[in-house]
Length: 70
Image (cartoon, rainbow, N blue to C red; front, side):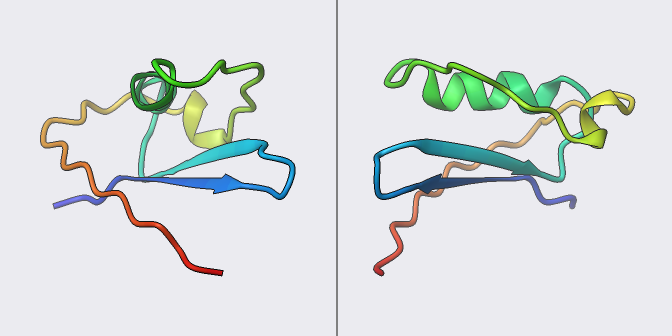
């Protein structure tokens, strides 16, 4: 089964960045919006090459949140 991941980084100023892995097409954007838009204002999105590839449907979603200690 293919793995999909969204990595979220928060810098010292509180700026949040999210990057997707394993997604193709516009589904990566919709997954980030679904995950973040209820709590955060999304000001800007940059797209990787995978965004412009043919879209795949994400059928099985499992949400896992891990907090890294620095």
